[in-house]
Image: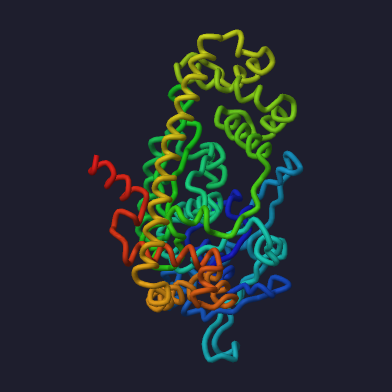
Length: 442
């Protein structure tokens, strides 16, 4: 079962208890695509209490009443950057009702919950910028903050399609409503980040590692590396390693200028510039001019030579520090060139890997026969399709014959991964295993 919600809701700022969050997810999980408004949904009270870890007795009843009462007071805060400093605030739930079994007409006590009407654009009629989250796995998480970090990383990584997610520490704390808690980053790392890292790896399809970004000794940002884990494979949520980029149906990409602009905004925010100010700067200067001056700022910051970073950013753009700091500018260019060279080398290795994998796939098809492989593949893809609507739709649309599987980019991508996993030597299954084999051979 999947919970589908707008990305803005996944990255909104709010706080609640884990039990309250589980109730919110429970309501979201039963919303239908064809619902036209926020309906009142009924659940057997005993099942809800069990789901929340409450005893089915008077004590449990009193705790449930407390949970629903507190939930009705919870507010979600969604920024609206299109209006600069705008925001929307509203309650999660409009009503909660406990109906005793003698009045319910069902022979058992029922709990009725209705989401607030303002939730409609974030849970209904979603056509873009949304995520589908595996409900059962997320519901097992033992911490509210672990649930929230999953939602944030799942949305920002486009459901694991993007391997790196960069978030300023200020932004992450705002989303978690922890702006005033854990002023010591070591405490935030231990109690929130590392706890979520362990929880997600054990119970969800998403695993992550992270690195910190600093201004001097102060942590200002986090760079998360996310990937699918074994749980994702079991759920059928993983996409084929590496092949998915070239073989999945094309996704509309931003123009190159939009990507460059977004990169500039991320760099400015990482340096401590507020988002609205970063937008103003991006509108005021040429993007290449900003990028080259930020190279100077970042290099000098790396050396620990800046006390007030944001002020230094503004001065660099106003006075063009590319010429005023020639030695630092040269060092920044050299570091960037070295980074690009390393990226090119890595890309070259990945291209070799892609070529080898495709060669092995085609050779395996010739040796065994695509029709014979498809006999083994069909139960596998149907099992995945049972838990993945994207795959299921492709199967319904094209079937699973030799011709249709090869013609559909998504099914072909999974077929090729299945061939590599089932028939090919182990080193071809992932880029990492292939790279290890190459290193051992050399």
